[in-house]
Length: 158
Image (cartoon, rainbow, N blue to C red; front, side):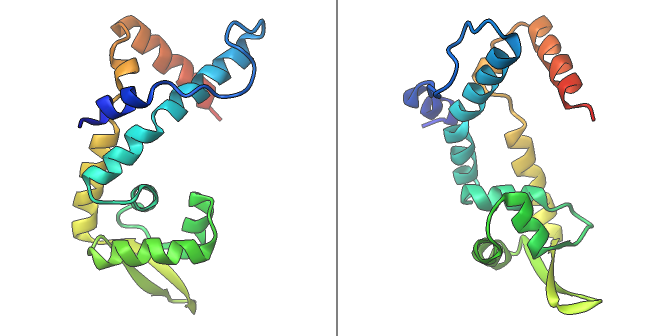
């Protein structure tokens, strides 16, 4: 079953909160963004499964940048989980040859993570697949897609 079909079968997730049509456009915009993100959780899990990854393994691999080392503790912070949980995630990615642990030169107790050459290629394939927009976005007109992109860019500017 395709990712899109799985997402449709589950239907749109209805999150508690202000009803749509709220008089505050910021509140309604945020509620709509949360609904869109939550309705795509199944899609993201299915994409991870396509690559024989657990969703957290996929997020961990994408959080690591090829050519850069990252302490395991920093990955735990990025994934918003306990460092003990990262150990299992890293074990499975390392067993597949996608990442490797290295000792930090300044402190051998600190384990640094690095994407392997094979992992960089695999990560690129996963990233391309995740970049495929979901149906609710692709069905928008080109003008609406550009408007949405531009508004989101402005919202994310620091």
